[in-house]
Length: 105
Image (cartoon, rainbow, N blue to C red; front, top):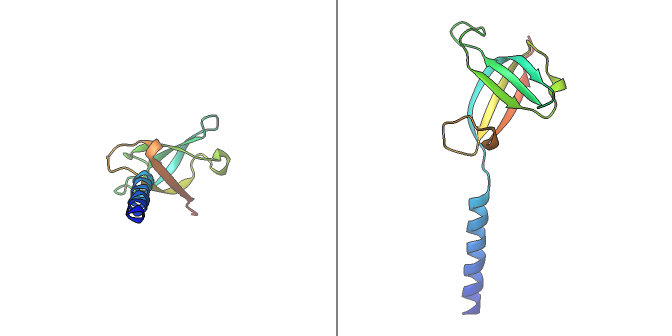
């Protein structure tokens, strides 16, 4: 009986820990241009390239937190992969991670 209780308790702990894990899944990838740098807030403002025009006209604008703004320059082309740990279709940086790669031209 004591073994069953112990196994049940361990199983409940494992289920609880699995539910608390923040699994980030790839949401989408886009390319864009660094439009602004905010060193104080450590945020990049990136304007998405519109695939039709291959330019910055008509694209979405994203504010993305980064650890080191000094790695980037205004006008620099980047590719951003967005990872999210929520199924909601909202831009919430508290539930997102970003992989930003500088595109060499």
